[in-house]
Length: 201
Ligand SMILES: Cc1cc2nc3c(=O)[nH]c(=O)nc-3n(C[C@H](O)[C@H](O)[C@H](O)COP(=O)(O)O)c2cc1C
Image 1: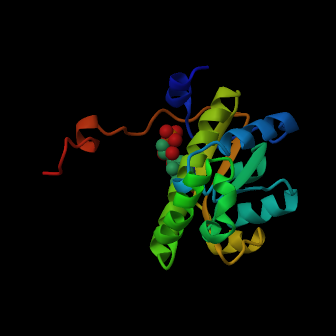
Image 2: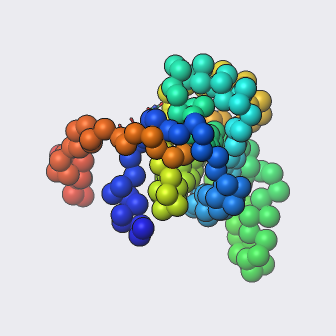
């Protein structure tokens, strides 16, 4: 499947085969592809929590209005981000770049994020969203379906996964083998409503 087909055929699937077990090599491939997603200043601040403990999945399902994909999908990921990754030894994000690039990047990263809580959080959400789309398209290409999710209580799920205080949850992602296809698309807007040429009216 090529990229364009994956984009066209990706749908949010809700009903998964609970008996399917994702092979470890598929999991590693998916996570490796996710980690190629872009991040501003290459800070790679996403943290992918793979929830494979059935009891934790059950607890998350209870915090997600009993949505069955939480327990039934082969893979359930909570996409988090470290809000403070920018100040945690940032040189490692550029360690293979030429020295002059590193010398430019270190103060640039610091200036961009320091004392800017909103920027830190906005970047976290952007990066989780982009990584989620990478995962969903990669999953489609590998023969899986997926469902992005924010229909859960974030504080409760944070407690269940022991989210560090300086991290946030962006969204969750169920990935697995569909038992039922998604319903037909519900109501795509016309492009002329969502595309603006140059400036809003
Ligand atoms: C951030 C986000 C959160 C979502 N949360 C849920 C959810 O909790 N449960 C669910 O069944 N679908 C969820 N969806 C799926 C949307 O309902 C779905 O993407 C939308 O209806 C468009 O359908 P499609 O993805 O099949 O094209 C979510 C989608 C996004 C992008």
